[in-house]
Length: 141
Image (cartoon, rainbow, N blue to C red; front, top):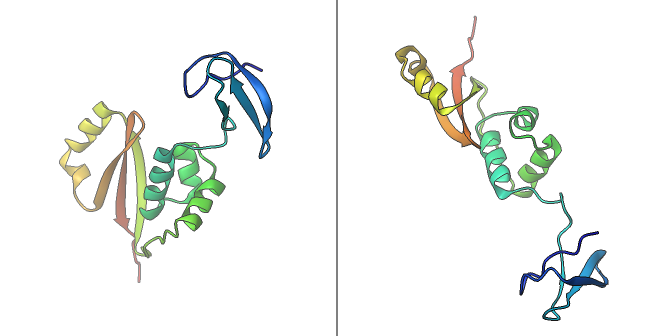
C-alpha cells in the first residue's frame, strides 16, 4: 500500500497509525499530523447527482439515466428518495432525448423543422449536450 500525502504539509512520508471507525489512520513523519483518507470509489461527484435528479424531473426513467450517466439506477432511486424529489405528472407527454456534440447540436438546431411542435431543453452532459424533447402522446379515439 502506498502511503498517502499529508493533507496539512503535502509530505509523502506518512506511516500507518491505527484504525479509526474502520478506516486506516496515518501519521505524517514530517509534521506529526494524524489523518485518515476516504475509501476510494465510494463517492460520486455531486455533478452526477444533480444531473441525475434533473433528468428524473424531466421524465427520463431510472434505467435511461443509468445508461446516460453511467451511475447505477439504484443510486438514482436512493437520491430521489433522499432529496424527496417528486416527478411531475406528464401522462400526455413523452420525453425523448438525444446526445449531441457541439457541432451536431448546432446543425440540429439550425433546421426549422426540428424546432417546431414540442417543448425542449438542452443541458450539458460532460463534453456533450443532451436535448430533451417533449412530444404529446397521440390519443386515438
